Image 1 (tube, rainbow, N blue to C red):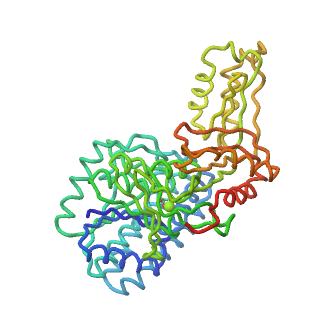
Image 2 (cartoon, rainbow, N blue to C red):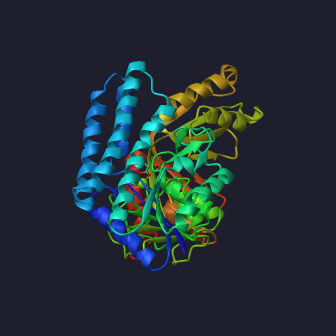
Length: 470
Ligand code: ASP
Ligand code: MG
């Protein structure tokens, strides 16, 4: 089989982890598979880089200088163990240092100009992956596994949305095949940078934080992979956050729709867009644990097996606010919903949930709290005439709420799920502020107060039998 394996920040972030990575790749190759890898920056590096860039804009270059030392030290100590103190290591460290010189020069420029553009931020943010591929490829080569580092600006072609670029499918397929095929034909393992791509003109972009997952599925699709494996530091997608519910455990099988809902609603295990390329080509995706490589993890395919559970997972996404547009004249204003959401869209805010009562007296929707002032301002401007005429009331926002998502495709056709859901919340005296159900019936989402969130998650996890092992 042709397998794309993504190794996340913790999986390439320490000597122990990197040793596991080598073992995993060797094992799959020994079984006769063709392996391609996509790797993240070493754990914590991306944060250091981005933070330094932001500080430089405010006139502080010391942060960048310190970050450089920390990052250099991370690579120096990992390579010392895994490559030994010799010319191979010297070569890797020289290349890492050249990238760090670039980093410091960029931060210097930003400080002098006092300006940090999204485009510059993408160049800086992607440096961690560029260092990481050099290191991983050298370690594999040193352990008798031929490997070749590849920078994904040559593979993934994107639009110009810096910070959350969208891949162009056709172009990416053509370029990826052209670059990767010859490497595969010589029996080498391509070690590809996660997170980054480039526009058609070759300007570097990034796919958004945690974007290496997305890189893996984009490349999987581009080169017709048979499977995509996401190697991380947990044994699959959990029934809920184990920090809230200690009984939470990995789910063995999910459908593309289910994981789509879960990652959209804040399950940290997969980038929110990552499942889409796999889904298009029906490529199975597995979430696996680098530190427990024999655990089966979570398999994601078109149809999920019915494990006898209508609800498979519960997530809560925090720090949201609910914005309400309402007024007595709402029914009579043509195209009001269209105008509201066009305005919200233009202010670049992402809407997590929408709910409108059938009386058409109000529309409410949820956006991240940080984006609220911006959205309210834009709406007030757009709807000022209607507010003046008192057809609409002033926009209201209700902060400190969470969106709780209850996910499972077998809720469809299982009567009584919402009954148990609201029954349990009612008994727990948890007030539900708004509700939405996707027509796929794969997800019911609720807005509740942030202070009730953990308790609600615990109650529902138990109510739907997720406390017991599968
Ligand atoms: N290194 C990038 C980040 O921290 C991408 C990734 O790890 O997936 O967001
Ligand atoms: Mg990640």
